[in-house]
Length: 316
Image (cartoon, rainbow, N blue to C red; front, top):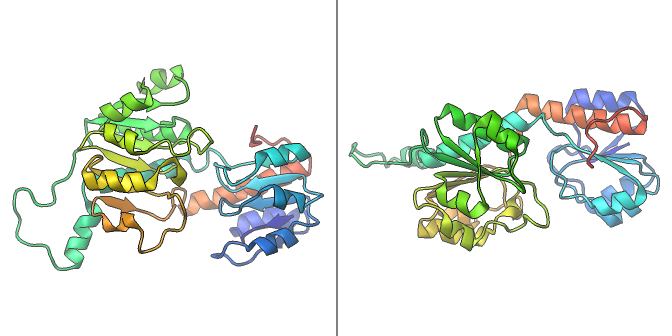
């Protein structure tokens, strides 16, 4: 088995118990392409991260490969067609990061709405002056309209939290899901209608050929001038230059982003010139308990496939 980054000890223990394991042991540095191609040359199992591009070239370099396990829910970095052509099984780690990612979506939403980072910066630079009635005013969230784009596990978790804030709930998916209306009281909307009606828009949709670039100038122009836009899904869902222009124009009012078109972004990125943006470095699942569980599940998935055991997390 080849592992593209050292994982938490419980996951490594599972892997070592079941065979020979080779690891790219630089915790903070993605594996170079050449090292990946060498490392998988004679293995049956690969455990990778979202930072690893597993394309046809990589798959061809591993003639014995039978299983790929990704420590993530999304797998847009993997050439599924090339895997399928070889009959290689792909697994992911759903469910375990749902609540943690939904928590971060709400952290970004509230921070952007109430200008938390702006306020911290104001104090930090010694610019906090006497109180006045419109000092650092933001947008209310309680009792407003929440629209979620992509109502899978994470999207539904975001909607559930909206109930606690007394919000009217809207969602957009490829198709309506009656269970969401029944269980959460959320109403289905077309994307355009959702954008026009919502005070807060949270994106949790997967990245596919259909969803890539789905948020651009046309979509942002539909949003309210008081609305908040939050993306905790994948960066390429959003045309970033269009979002920067829209935020400068005041529609949406603010944004909270955990993901970007090209990661990592640098200190000269245009988003960092905007006071109405809250940014985090792709940390949606970054709690101690969740990352350990993700790694453990990815290890369990890989071992299950290689040893012919039932594997509930096979990507269809």
